[in-house]
Length: 245
Ligand code: ATP
Image (cartoon, rainbow, N blue to C red):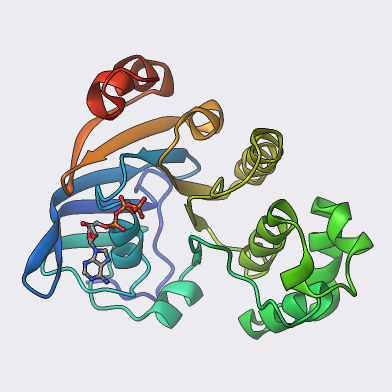
């Protein structure tokens, strides 16, 4: 049996695999047998209506919540019992819903804090400002006073500081204007081109589907459909928008 610290990862092993995963809040089961494969290097969009279980799935994958049944494999390694820290060291990073920034720290201080990941601060700043020049312009501003889109840029920059191999994104578009969402998803596509695998959760599908290689739809704690973005978007309205999209 391999451990988290051993270099495994032959390229054909999926970066993430969930097999019959169940999870519950107390006695209420919210994940009810999730099977999902994210191939290495792919962008997978995980779609589904409010309450379908998408955030819970990300919490299980990132070690914040233990599955009650089933298996979670990261790069071929069984990680059901791994802590969030161990998973971060193994290459997994999550951008939580509602933006992972410290509002009372400046942009630059938020990036400094990311150096706990072991990367040198100068490198983190250079990479962040190259990817998001807007953050450089605002580097002395408190993160809490940035626009929503700028806060998401900062969350992404912080998440990328540890050079993850798998990035989990929860509702990147939450509360943002469509043009801002489009530009954030352009950044997601660029990050993917640089070799990072991405699992992105969205309630509203179109931006995520534009950059995704694959998509899966959750309903009632299970994956009820999956395939290429074109196929999924054709079937999506019947699946959970009741024909409204
Ligand atoms: P949303 O877009 O609202 O975040 P989601 O698909 O991400 O939806 P989850 O947040 O995973 O769904 O929630 C799935 C179900 O679990 C919902 O019925 C929700 O009410 C319930 N739930 C979520 N968090 C908790 C909690 N901390 N305690 C109890 N039940 C919870």
